[in-house]
Length: 380
Image (cartoon, rainbow, N blue to C red):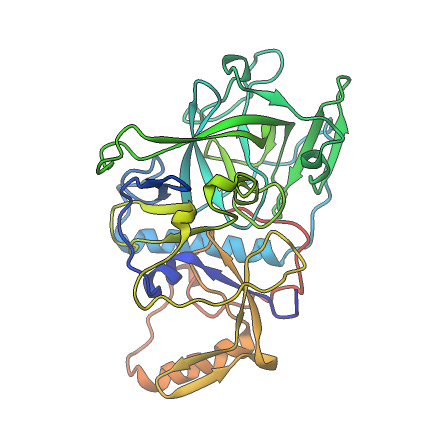
């Protein structure tokens, strides 16, 4: 990626987007489907904290975004061996969740939806039937209870797509390790399963009981993690070969390699919709588009920011453009200092109010300077 990489959070984008953000209603089409896209702070989320005020929830989201920016700007971590010791557990934050049914019959798993990583993985019992140590709220998938579970060979395309490291078991199955930018990681066996996507109960509007089943999806059956993953797994929605979006594109009946979301306002206690295939088309009047541009990291969805307008003043991005990552795990928008400083100066000319101190100094101008590119991924 070019120098001066930026990071854009989806919550701000949702507040400004031209499309009409409607609460999730469980729609499904013959060549596409929609699933619930649940914000972690919404009332229906298991991570909702009723003790927080609306302002408190925003501050917590700001803290998560700060962690995200630091993750993007840190250097790549070395991958440990599969048999080595794990590092200190690191708290991992995130913004959005989606439910997936894994196996036949399906086990409902609530996973982190992440546009800045590729691997789809879920907590699994190991070959002896023992469950790894997990928080009580985390669900663990048992492959022995599914009639559609399969393992992937070491020479398979899915196995070769793992960026960090693979080894072969005695049976020539693919054993993986997948690392994130803040030293957290997951390891286990690359496997295949049938995934089931269903509407949220009680909001079907004529689609009650309808589900979309997709066979032979590659995923990581995780038997060990380093770091604190509060959910049941991670659904990578990035642009790489292992992401759910890329894998779904192999099913031509689903309408191609595309997905979309238009988020309800941050203050609304309702879930949004995450649309795949043909249902990903945004048809709202006034909706506009901008092209995705090539990135050195296949995972990232990158757009070109050329300028920002405040009133009648236009501020051009340094060098005429800045490449921006669109990330579902970040609430705030982070801008390069060369673009941000004149914007703050212009806003200060128009806002004639005393400045209030920022709690924990979270909302002061960041000194974060992005690197030229990131060879690995972050999850928040």
